[in-house]
Image 1 (tube, rainbow over the protein chains, first blue to last red):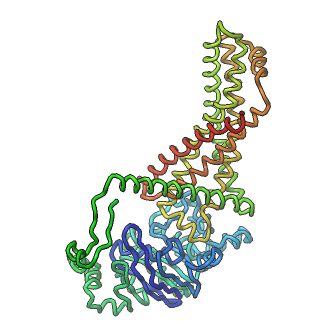
Image 2: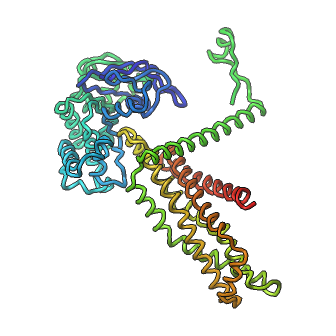
Image 3: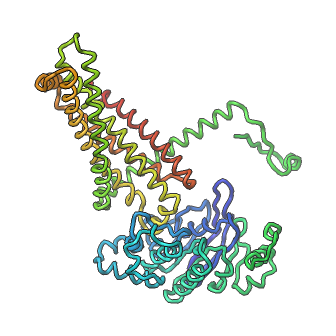
Length: 255
Length: 283
């Protein structure tokens, strides 16, 4: 379970203004909202990549911000993070990139064959043919493949929580659908808790158990996908209409 | 910077709910600017000290990747060799020619050997090699880590439970500290040989006479001094480069900005340390 308690963060201006949210174990939660509402900041605070000014986040009861370095390392080991642009290490091959997802102490003790097996399994899970990509550098892969390698790196350590930061941004509809299917499949097959930050509401709703909408640093809406679709909230409506390609100024009006 | 006054609700009402603001005075602006600069400097110093401390701890605990360190040593050392050789030879050639020009007809020419060897070993070898090292290695480290920072690769590393300083910083700092003294030694040697051959070709000073002059004022300590300078420069250059790389922000423009600032800081640091060396060791 992931629990956000009164999370506040400001850079030049407030970004998160007291976020309270609870994501149950095994649940897939989509966090939506327009640009600049603090979705990615919220996701980064989850594993301590950004420290909030106030509040706390608890992962399976462990406090992210009131723990020593070892506990934070344990927390990070429980989580897999999929970055917006995959954030693969440029100078490393796909094999090296994915193997970095294994805990360091484990990696040191493992034989090369075991590492190779784990990496190949993860690549297989994200629908990539291990033999054809293992020795490639990130620059030699397409955008969709890079995202999937990023996903493989996040799951190779068998995390309990998966955090996705805009996983389909920049992908064509076909690749976006593939990634969404993968997220759903990983949630089902690995039984992980998933938090998905996205703009792509139509793609995210079918694979989510619950949806939360961030607005001006606060949770404006929280409910099931059906409740989200049926909501009378102006901003929710604006989002849904925009997503179904209705030309509108409603977002600006609602904001 | 503006001064915000605590005011009552009636004043807030007349100012649209905001606290009343007074116009900046010169002194307030000056103090504010001074404070910001001091804070920035303290922040840099603190972050550099943290990188040094974490790298040291990682080294003592045997947590620094040997493979990464050797790869960095190859990149910093072997691949820098051609430019270091060229710089070394040219420094010898120039010093020898200048010495020949100044001493012809005034003092015995074998003094050229002494001038060339002393100036190369004590000053030119270490400083020129360090400047070349800044351009070739320091700038690369900042640009490389800066790019990793703005493309979230550093965040990715942290999310995977790796410490960026231990994984990326420490191997570079250790490699620099080990490699630069060797490069300085090579630059010293090749500079002296270049100076000797130039003296022979330009002012007809024989090798024996050159070496006689060189031995006259030579102390073995000078060699340690030269290599020691190389070691200190080899430590501070990657230290600053790593620090500047890891604090990069703002996309491609930010990487350019960080790299430029890093090169300036590295040159300044090297020159400052170079100036303090004689005060400590040559008294």
